[in-house]
Image: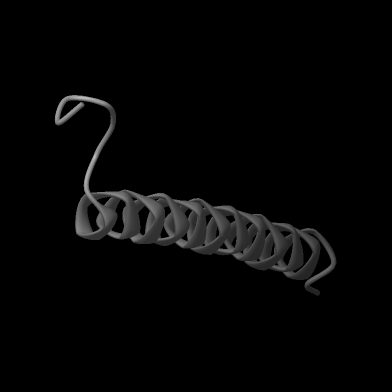
Length: 50
């Protein structure tokens, strides 16, 4: 019976770790999206400069 699953603190730690990993992916996605927006604005500015 003792090997019938993980303890409650272990489950809680894994759930928190999974949530934190999801936040890291969202931050990475927003960062990359922002980099592209800045790049497009700079390309626009350079190509339309007089």
